[in-house]
Length: 114
Image (cartoon, rainbow, N blue to C red; front, side):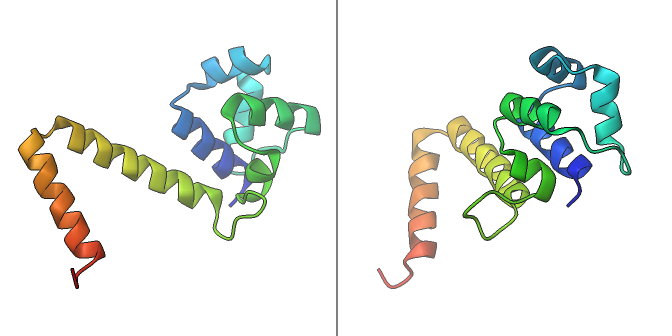
């Protein structure tokens, strides 16, 4: 994935606006917007570091889409985390009886021989 796609993904995960990211980093909002364009510019190292710290991702992720020591794109992991967060929210909205049933279903799927 490109820097712009990785940056967009990280911003989405943190649920930030470019204005909020600008305030956190001290980087002009227009400059951040230029990094988000499909064929946008790549920031200098100091700005990439500020972005990564504000977004709680590595510079490596912003540049490559991968985190050190991982074998899958970090963005894929972020997408999974969003999906898991939605599942947790769904579970939280259930009654205790519904949660117990959901738990039994998951356990039966994970361990069909039990």
